[in-house]
Image (cartoon, rainbow, N blue to C red; front, side, top):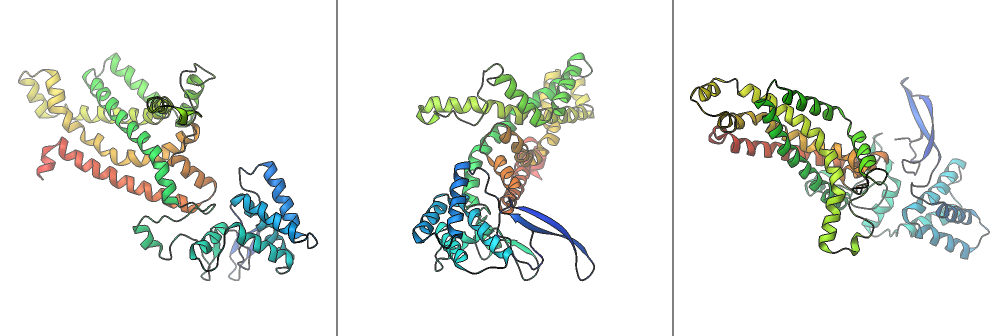
Length: 407
């Protein structure tokens, strides 16, 4: 990924500026080669921090500054944490472009890098943390790999070792657990509400098939299904936020002073902040599920055993809820396997719009930072949720249709 032709790593994050040129390989293949031009500071680095880091970089480059100035510069870089590393990478990168990989400035920069990352050659974990700052590295086989926390990535994966972030030192597993504690309740509530509302709407449409009521519900649900999630979220922000009615909070899951609230007030604050995100996540699934429920029941009520039940004089309520409902729910239950993982994709938009620190936003951050460890972990999570959805569907089949349970 963006290496020079000699395979030398360019010591940067995905925020590095770079130029590209077309190169002809020995076999005649035309390829684009990325050549970095500048190692930029990480997003969120303030102007004051940039000034301090630039001053520290200047001091480390100055052979006449003296030990006291060099020590002060090293401390400034160390105090900045990961935000200070690009300043050191820029020095190394400039020296590499100049063909001057040795000298006092390089030695001081490497010492500052070791100090900023708490590097200790005898401690394996610290060696790994330094490697995380570089992200990508070149292999003899010509490929590009991303470091993770273990020497045996597949064995580590079995124990949910998902590696560390390429742009930081946080373990992805711990960060995902914190984010899932936010996203999973919102997603589950959204799924439950969608099913609780979709089933009665589908049944109602069948009972009043061909009437104005059925037509009105059909039009409303098709309109809801056609509305993009991001647009719906923004409209809810405008209508119910401070710029509109001002009825509900619109950003985050808590107010700034939530920590000072009592348990009941804190819970109520969470409920108020969750209403708009849940509505945004629910309406699309509601429209789709209700249409599937209607289609499934319309097919069932045309069966011979339904005609027999009506011929026996059973009321329409008994025919629908006792004889037709269970069989018509099979297609809707099948959709559970696809709805659960789709909610992660939908939550990317919802959590970004409402500024919720959940799993969807974490995946979006990984995408914008090109942090492939985060993206791979998210993909694994979506796969697990798909399997859970399939398992729940199979279990629910046996509850709805006794014939499946007996088989």
